[in-house]
Image (tube, rainbow, N blue to C red; front, side, top):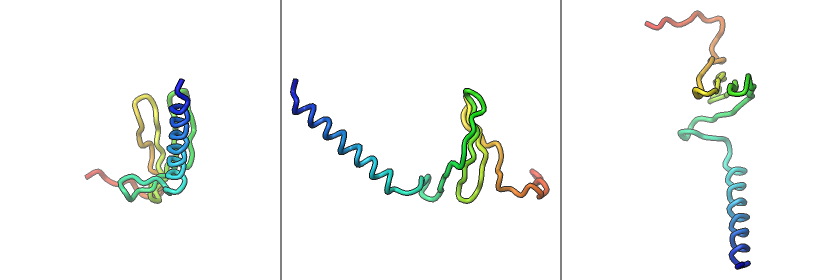
Length: 89
């Protein structure tokens, strides 16, 4: 067995792992499209295939459901609950 190849491969793994750690450590919050900050406030598993997420995106709190069919917006929790519903005209 060529021990030099094994040593070089391990060294490369350490270097790439260090670079990945550094990027993740110092990159800051997640940005999508350059402007949006996304933060998962909490998650609750409802059953084996369904999870509810409380997500904060640029000051808005959203309840998002995730299951076999994908992810869907369940509710926008930043909306004023006492405000009358807007007409879809």
